[in-house]
Every structure is written in structure tokens, then in C-alpha cells.
Image (cartoon, rainbow, N blue to C red; front, side, top):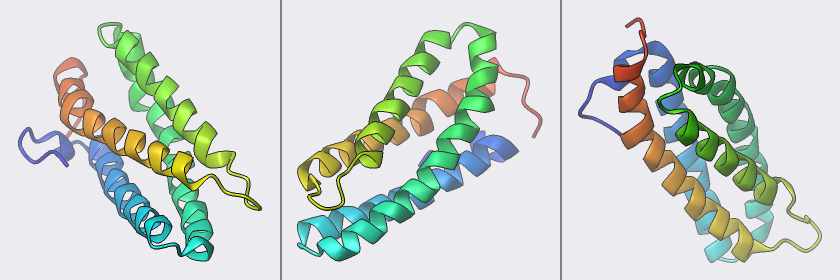
Amino acid sequence: MCNYCGCREFPLIGRLSQEHWDIEECAGALRRAIRDGRHGDAGTLLDGLLARLVPHTATEESGLFAELRAEEALADEVERLCAEHSDIHGVLGAIDRAAPDWPAVLKALDRLHQHIDHEEHGLFPAAVIMLPLAA
């Protein structure tokens, strides 16, 4: 997570960044369970990840992303990130619990990691510059 620009000093970005940390921890545990063949644990961990991810992305899209979209300079980037949200949610939320496609989950987890990295090191610092956020 970003440690250099001070963007986490802004309450909303600080909250979203902490949620990213929690999501990454849960995703890591899920990745390890899949790779270790602990598929019963993986199903439970997938549920836990979705329970964190769904409200997190809703907060991003209705809060910070809505403000950035209105600012227009980052509107295209926000649209791309929202499409990534939909893609990742679509894969993780559609896993057939009777016959899970664990390789698809692992690919979605890789995309999720890249997505979070982009938000932490690109979008959040840009938001501090673009928006009149209160510290």
C-alpha cells in the first residue's frame, strides 16, 4: 500500500486503503487454500472475500469514484476501474460451488491484486491532487 504521498490522511481514502489491506489479506488466504488443495476452506474464504469486496467497491463507486467522475479529468480511468470491479465480481460471484473453477478464481485474484495496486499507487494520490478533500 502507498506510504509516500500522505493520501491515507484523508478519511475516505484512509478507509478505502485499510479495506484494501483487509481484502488483500483475505485474497492471500484464499489463494493459499486453493494452491494447498484445501477446497472446503477455499469456499468459506471466497465467501469472506466477497463479503468484504462487494461493500468496498460500492463505497468506491458511489463515493470517491463519483466525485472523480464529476471532475472529468479522471473519468475515463474511473470507468476502466468500474469495469474491472464488474469483471472481478462477475468471476468470483459466479463460481459454481458444486464444481468450482479454482484456476478462474486465481486469475481473478491476480487481477484484483493489480487493480488494488493501481488504485493505491495511481488513483488515490491523483485524487488528493484533483479533489478538494478535507483531511
